[in-house]
Length: 312
View 1 (spheres, rainbow, N blue to C red):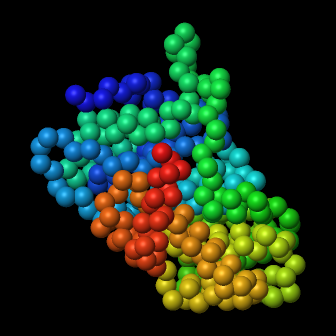
View 2 (cartoon, rainbow, N blue to C red):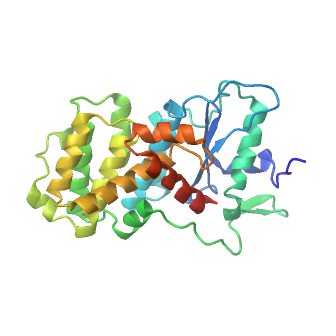
View 3 (cartoon, one colour):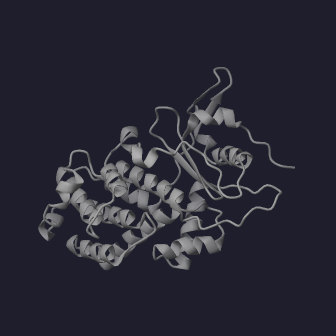
């Protein structure tokens, strides 16, 4: 007998921030109205009894947009941004409230998936039967454990004015690594560059970050900037040789040891992989996505195991 869900779609709908479907993957974010506590879930839509098409590559445009939003949230948290900083620009968000059935996916399957996806984060919400409204639990559950990526950001936020300027210039260098920036890319970088910094075009004309400027960055923040640089370079599941060479130069400029550089790079790759999978993704699909960001199969499995332990 199928498990009966505790909540209905109608109850859950006010909590939905964004929702998208890509083939048989649902990408969805939940939050109390007005709250900056966002809970995101990627969920594999269960097939009905009829025979559907095989799951295609998850690394398509919808998944990339979802991953980009996760990257923006991570950067904004590292810059001290709240709900205003979390919200994504119009270009990235304009279709996010539309659910369009993917190939072989019915609306009923999507509706069921929304309810089942919510079950994964429902402990952070409480339904009041009397008022018929959502609120926070009277005794909130402990926050989920942080990943090494999240621990680095929490311990070493980019708060100092000099540090923010260096971060912004690094982002601009990455944006123009191949010599041009498409309008959609410019909108994305606008969301991650601190609002008190110059615009992308102005930053791109700045001098490259010097070793002296890098030395003056707050010690732990050097790692946060470098880790974010890797995330931004990989978030579209592509890394060209120019960007990779630039990232290696940053490691030298920030005087990172090989061990620290490798750890920060792995933290970034794990973050990107997690934003493109659900914990129960088939191994072949996991390896395919991991390969796009230069993560070997062993590390891909370790990433999924750690992810599953954190999200339950």
